[in-house]
Length: 141
Image 1 (cartoon, rainbow, N blue to C red):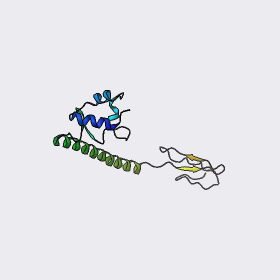
Image 2 (cartoon, rainbow, N blue to C red):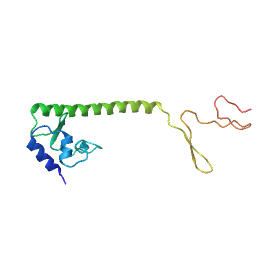
Image 3 (cartoon, one colour):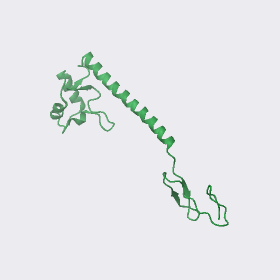
């Protein structure tokens, strides 16, 4: 079984960009997805390698320009994700202010709750002759 230490030694020995497909084939992986961050987990080379358009390179072998390009790309990505979260927070706050929560009414005998749709107001009970009418503008006849 290949460990990340074997891959690290190989990248150090090559001291250049190595395509991720080449690494996958050399170390017995079905595809190169294991080298990329996925599902919130970092890739297996993220502790010692930088990635670029040409593949992976050990961080010790990277030139200053390659390192700065990698660093700024990650920083820009992180900032754009934070901006997206901030914008979604604002949208969510505006939407939740305008949405009226549905009224819940409990049935007296059984205690079951009735959830009325948001688009309709709570249904009014018809006025019965001789009873006090609670509907606005309606009067008992």
